Image (cartoon, rainbow, N blue to C red; front, side, top):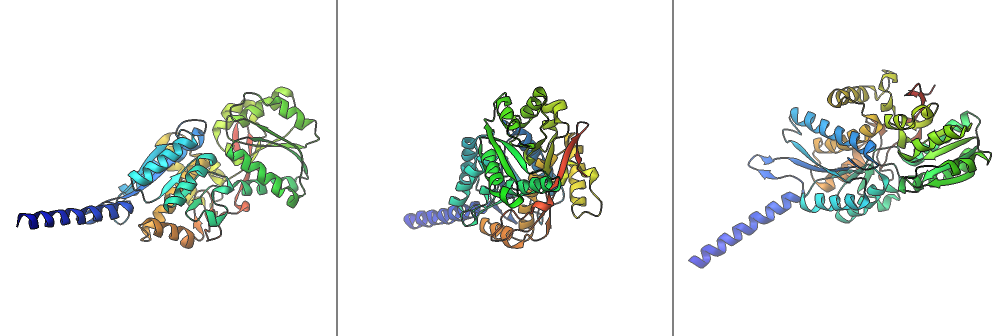
Amino acid sequence: MKKVFLFMMMLAIGIIAVACSDNAETGGSEGSNGVEEYKIGAIYSKTGPNSPLGEPEWNATTLLVDQINENGGINGVPVRVILADDESSQEKATQEMNRLINDEKVLAILGSSGSGPSLAMKGIAMQNNVPMISAAAAVEIVEPVEQSTWVFKTPHSDRHAVERIYMYLNENGISKVGTLTDSNAFGASGVEQLENLAGDYNIEIVSKQSYNTQDPDMRAQLTNINSSGAEVVIVWGTNPGPAVIARNIEELGLDLPFIGSHGIANQNFIDLAGSAAEGVIIPTGKLLFPDQINQDDAQYEVISSFHNDYSAAFGSEPTNFGSYGYDNLMLVIDALQAGATDREAIRDHLETAISNYVGATGIYNFTADDHNGLEADSMVIAEVVNGTWKLFE
């Protein structure tokens, strides 16, 4: 009898262990009333060179989680986002990715802020069949699509940004450009798109220069670009590099207009560049200037509400990077609200059910062939005027 009793006890324990393991894979813990919480992982660059990007994404996430749970969660089930700082490092991003997937058993991963860490995370998401929504720009994060089936992203890609810049150049009769790009993953992806799309817009790249992320001076590259006959310099990077370049142009007294990427769409660039920021042009989303958006714009309500809530909570503006944090989480919330509560269901929902979805960054239309879901004409042009980003008229 004792042997039978011990066998039955061991069998019961085994059944319980399997049930707990199966439930852990879905990112929820099973209680007497069903799932106790929906668990999501988020990896953003809270510190390091990408912190001007990652901090508003991190803040947006905490703000939204509080709001969602204060309003009853998802059909009464609270949401828990486990935030991790990748310190702007690919190595740290992969460590946190593995921890969140294998130890925390999250339903989905949000992030990271930079293209390099996001590309490093992509492979892990694919290997483990975990939906991932990146907040970085490089088009390679979601292409080729057959190698990105579990990966999505919310920022406009560098391809969109390049197209919008070239549209602006065509509108202003500018055809000869010099490029000055960061040697990191973001810069490399940007220069690839600048080269690939130049012919489509009758743009000639007359000088191609690069720099390292932490270089303190780029005057030599700028001198080369200026002597090449370039009418403008297109700078592709995130701070501090672009701000250094703007100051270098001012120090050299060059009459060389500066066009930047959407990677400097924040006040930090203006603060770092000082007076040299005046007149700088970038392609951007609309959250950069919420008070300049028409009330009949489809994004007006989302942008205004988020901007006001964020500003009240943190005493600063969310910038476009905050909009990526907003959209990343709210897309997963949309899936959960629709009943997609496991990893595969969330992935399928993102790919098939996100149509004309109004986000803070743009209006998304994900498909099996497009895991970014945005178009170049959803970006606008901004200019620094009197120390502030203004919608270019």
